[in-house]
Image (cartoon, rainbow, N blue to C red; front, side, top):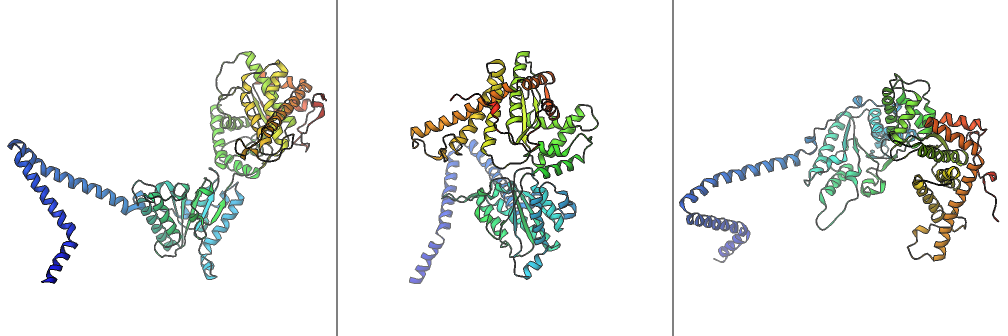
Length: 555
């Protein structure tokens, strides 16, 4: 009797929830019946007629929602219609990759490791799992990944990291599983497979954890880490993941970069002088151009350009040549294309003769100071044709790449910025609002020299910008501000003295700009040669402070 009672108690304990639900449903049905009986016959009939339709609608809605959810969760990557690409279809060789030789050499080593994975395992090494390509946009990360696939002869799967991100929790992880499942099948049939994930930072950022759960992003990231370890299926096929990003490396999750995952890093930077020349030659071969288009000169002009930007410049030059009714691209078309990319389109703006003349003398001040006083930069073009928000411009770039700035080049930047202001004062003894951006540039450089780089006249050393506000003494702040102003005033005095000393050259350039509107590199060189001023950078004579350009001492 006791045992029977205990079994009854146990039954109610184990099935109490179900019994409660049944009782609740019975009560609800009873209440509905009581409610229906209290209605008038007409309304009761309408309500009874709608019950089957409402019940059917609930079933249909539940079925549709369940179908969509299960489709998203179950099919994952396959629902996106991605197909693998055979290496023969990619057909990009390392010989086709130009301008990034250092990165290409590193990737050749990656290819050797992928090809020789059997020998690597025989000596106890581990299969290469992942490669991370880091570099600015347009430098060929995707292109070189395709070259790796071609050189290794392996099939290629390409996805953007943003394709893994969805609102539904678990969809991204499902897509990662399906992607690697497909890659392992391809690796089993072809001896290996390459997965390329572009813009990896969209899914590979540092994970965040909170009391409300880890979220869809973390689930996707965790699944990717598992697959990179080869734990997704226990398989050891030769699957190599290549990730690409132009974001800072430190925003990626450390677990993604640890040894055994994306631990092989390839840094792809913008091409140097020789690299830019090779890229220009590559794309110029694809268009009709005459002999005046010099790739070496273009490479000097296009410092800081990525391969994609160089390709865009060549395409833009073809459009300019077509617009100018020419059958081939000329040097004029090429420079016009570069000007449009860097400076913007020319705008039709009505300018009176006085303003145009003042603009010419303003730009002439910039031009002469750059040519005679800057130790690194050369003048490629001067123009008083309005573009965007400017009435004129002097385009100058260094003759070669520099990765740091010395005191001389920084001071020269200040003098160039003040050249327009000095030109207006020397010619008209006044100035215009056009000096606003020049002053901003000059003061920014002078402030950095004094406050951060220890280049002030009083030799105060240190980066004073990191000291909390209020902790610097008034004497130090005053001295730093005095040093900043001294650099600006001394530079202005030298620039004004230069323009007055070279007044004939100053007038010659201003009148040439007023007459022609623009001066190209060869025209600028010819005028300086006319006045016996050979390019100091070409002859190894770095411009320095010349006493004849300085005003008399006031001491």
